[in-house]
Amino acid sequence: MTKIAAPRFLALDVLRGMTVCFMIIVNTPGSGAEPFSPLLHANWHGFTPTDLVFPSFLFAVGNAMAFAMGKFETMPTSAVVTKILKRTAIIFLLGFLMYWFPFVQHTANGWELSPFSHTRVFGVLQRIGLCYGIASLMIYFLPKRTVWIISIFLLLGYWLVMYVGGDYSMLGNIGQKIDLWLVGENHLYHGEGVAFDPEGFLSTFPAIVNVVIGYYAGSFVRKTGNNFESIAKLLLAGAALICIAYFWDLIFPINKKLWTSSFVLYTCGLDLLILGSLMYVIDIVGRKKWTYFFEVFGKNPLFIYLLSEILAIALYTLTMGDKSVYRWINDTIYQKVIPGPVGSLLFALSIMMTCWIVGYFMDKNKKYVRV
Image 1 (cartoon, rainbow, N blue to C red):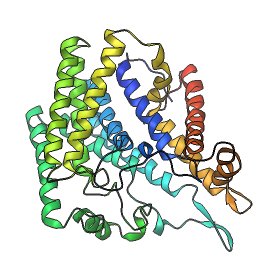
Image 2: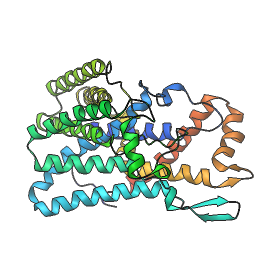
Image 3: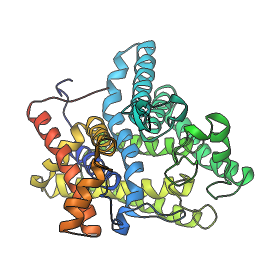
């Protein structure tokens, strides 16, 4: 844990905080009732507000890089590469251990060690780590023009590979085939009812572009300042990306679980609109009183996200009678008092607020977890 010394970009903290806040809400819905539809991912092709959460986190990672990479200029290249690779590895490992947690499972013979052979390899934090690492190395070593060319190649190349290698179905796409060959069925996500990982290997490559666009958006704001001109350009760029995404959607559908190229442009466009709007409200209009709630999440995003996931996993693991504590709380309290999607939402808000309180005390004590 370290104390923050450098000045912070408030709109970035708020954007990152909003992302973590809503990520917790959509990841920990109460059991026993179907959540409100905007809090669910699109079944396949299409888009819901929930689908914006993860790409927004990657976009915010890029924003933060624009304000953090300046210190690399005074460091030797070997130290920079070591720092990037170390951070990438730690984030990836934290994600892997999070999916393995609590490392034991209850069987007919009692508690036994969870086998490594059935532990998910890829995932949310793993993708964040890989995208951060690759984008950082690209931006550090390559000219801006080359980074943009590579980013375009990643989007077009991913489209070509997906088109040639299979179809756009869950089990027929080339990314699924690569994941099965690379890590095997038992190491994939099974939340869809089959072995399919929405954070698989191949779809990580277009996700790098979310970080790259976030970086150059942050770099632009850092150079031009928080003024009407910079906000207008962000909004225009966001509208342009959304327009391109809509046309691309006609032949390469917007799909979060495949992380299609049209999905990248669409989400980056929305993030640019949101960032520009936040800058207008916070820096131009001067409305800042409401921001602290999200700043708490934005100042300790990785720690609070991990806390929410570990808390949910622990509630699922512990039992109360023949039910998990997670389900027992929902069945006996939330769904009994306020049944239906409202009860589900209130449980998610309770988890979110529990994490916020922890983040609040950490912020008041100037404690910030950095990788």
